[in-house]
Structures are given as C-alpha cells and as structure tokens.
Image (cartoon, rainbow, N blue to C red):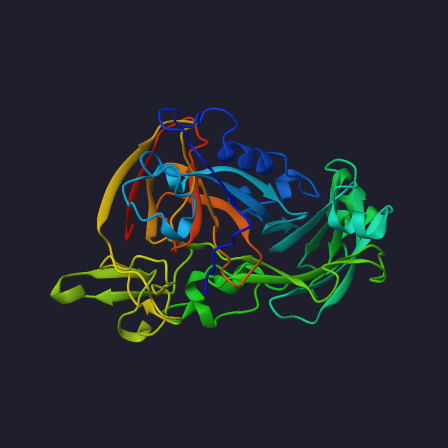
Length: 417
C-alpha cells in the first residue's frame, strides 16, 4: 500500500505572498528533459506518438497550505479539500536512471525498443561508489520477468549519460537498413539488437485477431503491451562485465511503465453488438475500465486507503487493507487549454481522476507522490491524443501540457478530494 515518503520537503508559503508559478515551473523543467532526449538511430525510424518516458525521482518539494493553515506542513493532516495550493509541486530532484520505450520500424520489422540511461559524471551514486567510471559501464536487466542478462552500456557524449537502446529485433541484416547515425550507434554498442530481453511485435495486437478477447491475456510479456504495465528490474555496475561496485549495491531496482491510458488502441476488449439494447444496426465497443460483468473483481477501479486518507464519505482512520472497490465521482469539468497551456504538476492525497482528451493533443504526466510499492518513485510521460483517457489513482502526481499551436479540449472528472 502507498506510504508517504517523509524525506520530501514542504515549502511554507507566507500569507499574502502566493507562489510565482511562472518562474522555474517544474512542469516545464520536466518536459524540457523530454525535449532533450535522443534516440540512438535516425529519428524517422521511431513512431513519435508512441514514445513513453520514465524519470525516477529522488525527492520532491511541495508547496504548503494557504493561510490560515500555512504552518500545517505535514501532508497527513492537510485535510482542507478546497485549498489547492498544498497540492502543487514546487521542485523535484531526479535519480540517476532514465528510461524510454516505444515503437521502432526498419525494413519490414516494427517492434518495441527500450532505452536505458545512467547519469555520467561524479554526481551519480555509481561514480561516488566506484571512484571513477570508464568509457562503459554494465547493466544487469530483466524485462517483464525475463532471465536477468548483462548488457554493456557505453558513454554517450551527446547526452552525458551512459546509454543503451535495446531493440526487439534480431541483428541479421540490421546494419544495411540503418543510416549513418544508426550504424555508428550499432558499432559503439549504443544500439543493440536484443530480442532475448525486449520481446513482442506490433502485429501481436492487430484488431482482427482480438475480437471479444481479454487483451490482458495476449502477449503478456510484450515490452510495449497496450494495457499491462511493463516492469524492468536492473542493477548498474561500474564494470561492463557486471563486476565491481554497483547501484543498487545489492539486488535490483524496479522501474515501471504503469500509466493507465486507454482509448481506441488501448482497451480491455473489443467486439460488436447487433441491435444494441434493442436498437438497430451494429455497434462496435471497446471496454476501457470495468468492474462489471465479466470484469467483476478486476480491481482496476479500486483505491487502497491509508489511515490519513479521506474516503468517499469524508472519513479517516482506516485499517491496513481497507479500500474502495469503486470510482466515486463528485465533480466533472470541461477544460479548454490554449496553445502552450499546461496544468501544473500537483498531487492528490485522496482522489482518483480521469483526463479524457476530446479534441487536440497533450503530453500527460503521471507520477508517484507516495511510494506505491510496485516501482521506484517516478514521473511517467506519454502522449494523450483525442479519444483517449488517462486514469490516475489516489497518491499520484500529475500534469498535462498542450504543446500544439491549437487549442485542446479536455473532459476531466473525479473524486474524492
């Protein structure tokens, strides 16, 4: 169950001096990191709409409540539901690891890739432990429960990170299909064909193969599954062969792509209904989230309750294991985001929320304010196109950016906060 991470700090805001959100905004800081990310091969080989970014967190700084509660800096006791200032993120510090995944295409192959990066220079934990790092480090990695395998990770001068990009394709003939940048990455080890680590193909989820099937049962180890989370267990080592100093010193750390994003390509099941509910013609349906009928007991709408949480009835003091097996809605809003408008990074201690993009496009951020127990605390970023929704649980950080030159229309609903 989620636990508050008390190492985070809360910034006391003096009464009458509201925060200046235009200065050093953390949403823009985070999206700037996305903008500076680089793929190993030529840009045209990647599907930009599929790219998903993971930035593990080291710590957060939150704004404190507004007056008259400006001295209540413990989030467990910030119970005023109408004070939004206490939810907003002031700043963050990232860990040493980053990850990107998405679709790559070359020749007649289209499949997933996974890029793993580790901070170069003396400010990383591995450098401090080892004393100095060379032109390559090592990584022992497991994707979706696969056998942990060692990978050599070269230093990339372009990004100042040790970086490796693993493609779910065999290496035969790959070099001849790449451009100059891709061939250089292949030669240096920045790009590596590793279908033994990254598995799956795009055609695994072809629409004509999934009628009335539970999508969660199809290719469950796929590295870019449209519904299931993808977990990566890894351990960085100072030596490329996996020996010497390591981060973490023992065991492994778990990264997780977990964002619950559903829509036309991301759904539990799809099918057709003739004469729907006594009507006429044929209806095609996509089940997105459900605890009804065949999906009863799925748990996707359930919210775990900590003692400090306000439940749907405004009560606190819950016991371990308590939860609500439903999504309680007590507000619905329509938002219009102008170009370059962003909903800032903020946390909800208590509520669940849905962001449904009606028109336009956005970059959705969902992260961990509290430790979920399923992955290292992270910011996760991916595209939210029209017709898709992002579902966030209580304890999630989130934000949304409209990066386009046209307005975006958003339907947002949730509860309880």
